[in-house]
Image (cartoon, rainbow, N blue to C red):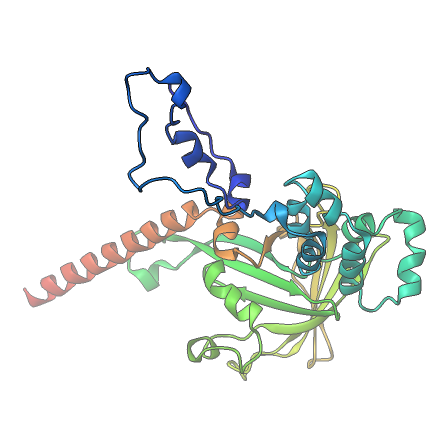
Length: 340
């Protein structure tokens, strides 16, 4: 009989190797052997009367140790631990763990105001997971693409080539009302390092030569799920750039209840410092329908490309390579004609 073992990720939480135990051949008992056949002996030597060493698993940990471990977990990890077994479920649903998460998520609210909200959400766990919030342990990412046509005079081609331009916008929110924003043509796993470590002292020498992220403020209206972001328009790398303040307005939404993993841009404009404080509108209709998607910081490199596959980038790189080869061939033909 053939036994097929299907992958069970929860078996990795235990120290016992169940697969090897199932595959280990069973030793026949002395009663099942014929009378004239001697009992098989182990290759390791004669057996002793010493008791076998006990096998300890994570399930054998005392409750005090489990509570100490769970008190240091993030909300998503605490929810995942609750799906292991009934013992972990009871410890993961302890109110003190979710009260700690709620106080850390809303540090501006005192204990009395948080306890008053229990009348609406019933439990600390529902308060920490269902109350509208901006996720601070993740980055909101959006990808934008548009076609750009170059002039025929600049390329010396019979038809003007069309280029597909791709850039990304990244937003990182903090509990103190600070938001870090970055617009970059780089791939997300390269650009997010400057959003995660946006202090100049934490950046590497290579990242210091690139445009720095903008540091602004944000406000969240929990009733209307309206998010208002204000960012300064200034870049030390480009001192001649016009300065001002850029304002963005988002609508917070979620794919499931309590996720809050989507930001839809509804308004986008800037007020310049000079020229009488004129207002520049960017037209939010171009970005409407392309939400900012939530990507956790832990495992960002792998998870971001689940939301934004790299197929478009491969096609874009092949397109750029083809255009470069075509221009190089034309320049070579022009040089050969000039020599003749």
